[in-house]
Image (cartoon, rainbow, N blue to C red; front, side):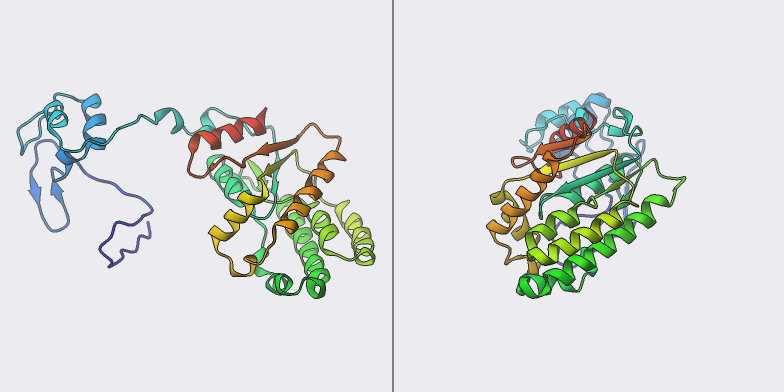
Length: 294
């Protein structure tokens, strides 16, 4: 599955990890495989579930059953059942009623992370913003007044082209479409970054192009407070973003909320995730999923 072993000697993440514990009563030892697994008796997270599956199973080398090994192990870690949260949400939740879902939020809110999780769990076609390819973005953060207009124009053109191409192109093998932005993002950011005359021209062009774009069946706004956004931005370490100020993020937040207030649409969901980490916490991810489907 593409794993590249590091030579640091430390444990590292890998695409998949399969340990062979037992194969009947076979005892085998070679350079590539040892059976039974030599660390079974030292790992409570192996012994506990194994005891529930087959408590009478005897270790062919140690000649002790699993219950006895569990009682004698030096591993004193606490084992917590997580089976409730490991159920594939596709089996419990139905998002097929939505053809097109837009995930929105401020810079660093977690839009792409949530869209990617949902896309993976629900066999969705993902539309991810191509901000990395925009040559004006690093320049904008160094000199906003000079590069704001070319930046917003390039984003407008790219978002329009991407949404037209990806949403109108039907995919037989995907159940729905999930994007990590909505077209109105262009107008929200432009209002904050552009001069009054520039914004008036930009707004006319935006509305001409927006008429042709499909509208999302559900619009999800991930709200995070400014302090948390700044921490997220710093953590992900994009050099050109490190100069972003709290005042700028606050104006973007206000722009989104002002836009949402003008929409008479039941399918707009505002979810406050300021105290959540839905990437690491499965329970919080499922909470967000329920809120989207509510």
